[in-house]
Image (cartoon, rainbow, N blue to C red; front, top):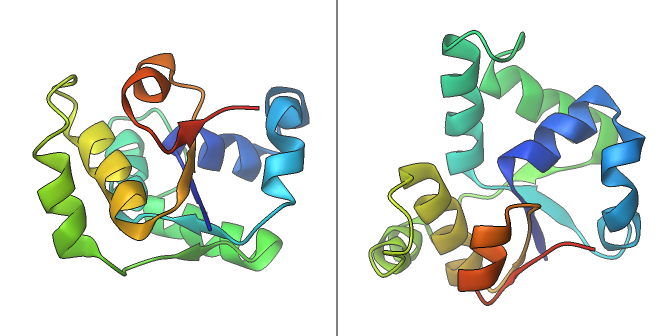
Length: 124
């Protein structure tokens, strides 16, 4: 099981094959999921004017185009795991990483800080 970080979801939606090239093998290797916390962050980015589509719209489009579903499993445990991720003050990073950890998923992220501190986070 693979969870996608927010920027990976944005790049997939945009069809940015150049940025996704290092993880193409990972994207084709297992079932792909979005955490609802990614959808929430996408919505926040839309509301800030940084994205042109809502979080829900992006999630639905990724489900249609790539079969990527939103996983609502282990949400209580995700919040609990996020409490221990004190290396960052970003609540989205904490919840997204906590959800991947609670789900036993690999978190695909380009974020070097997440990769340095979260055992299931990787890139390429």
